[in-house]
Amino acid sequence: MVEENLGNLQKEYKMDKTTEMLASYACRLSFEDLNPKTVHQVKRTLVDTMGCAIGGFTSEPAKIARSMASSLASNNSARIIGTADYTSPDMAAFTNGVMIRYLDCNDSYFSPGGGHPSDMIAAVMALADPMLTDGQTIITAITLAYEVFCRISDQVVIGDLGWDQGIFSVIGAACGAGKILGLDQRQMGNAISLAITPSVPLAVTRSGELSMWKGCAAAASSRSAVFAAMLAAEGMSGPSEPFDGKRGLWEQAVGQPMVISDIPMGGSRKENDPFRINQTIVKSYPSQIHTQAPIGLALELSKQVDLADIESIHIDTYHTAASTASSEPEKWNPKTRETADHSIPFLVAAAFQEGAVTPGSFTPQRITDATKRATMAKMTLTEDKEFTANYPDQYNCRITVTDRYGKDHIAHTAYSKGHKNNPLDDSELEIKFRSFAGGLLTDMQCDQVLGTLWAFDEETDMDELFDGLVV
Image (tube, rainbow, N blue to C red):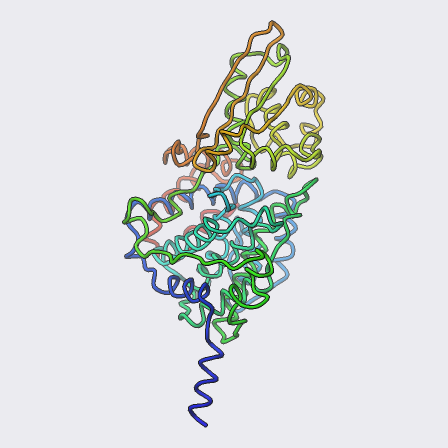
């Protein structure tokens, strides 16, 4: 009887291959596996992400999230960025995630699958605060979350199947959150299962006229991840085969079996296979990733030709950019901020008219501005097959502006500013941080927060960072 019960217990905790591989990797990864370049890249990412969070602090979605979060209490409460207030860890993950994502200026990773991996940082922070976690552990958990999200995205492209990026960010975030809680492999496997099984988000989030939810969807995944990790820590079990089993993720969402390659330990110690956080793109403008190159080129050309002299604008780009940022009629007639920051036509028109694209470019008046609409009417956009063939290694875009005198002005780039092959340096990241945070934080606060983040591996907890970010 004892042997029979033991056999049943082993069956109960059996994991499918994907879950076992992810859980094993999550539990084995340590700070000692990270080389200095990766540690520094996590710090750079935190600078970028915290700047974006403060930049999104006054947004309407952030206000709604904070209002809900303020009504919840917890014995293990977590801080809300920008305030001295606390809420439950899962609501802190959601609320902070909404702020991080609102400006659409946090980092991106496409290979060609992917999304915005820094969304997952909200989940790590939400448990690191009440757990009094030190900086090295937080850096490890963030690296882990990126590694899981990005390497799955390397192999499975879910956007074309109608699913949103949260389908994988919830897995990475659950691993990062589980790392903070110190889950063992069995608990980690359950956290992953409990995160993915109820969380298969629809890509309607980013289709048609976009709503506030566009900036909140990944935050909801972070909230689910924290909840899953906390359940697993208490002993809750999830389905043992959430990926590979009958009616699991691969069968239901992908429609075919998938074999996810083992994640190598040591990551960036191998030059040809670095930790994926080193492969991310940092945005220069508060807009969707595929609009970054068109904006930069439009700003370059705006110095060569006056807006009033433009006869026509033609944009050549790769398929993904053409399909996500211009193919729908709403992208040529945006009515919301969320649609406008995903619209190549609007953003190119804004760059020519304003000489910049900033959070201030998305007021209702500027979105409906008649001059922008007239400029958009002069545009055409087509896919360049060669550009598509070179994506995602290159993010090619070419803009040809014909002036009223018949002269063509042409600009082209394969790597927008912020791409890993054309990165923002540390000083440029600080400038970006101050541009978003400077309106709400004092210069002294900005100095303090930046100092904390650049030495984050020496922190014993998150108090200094949260205190410095209080608006």
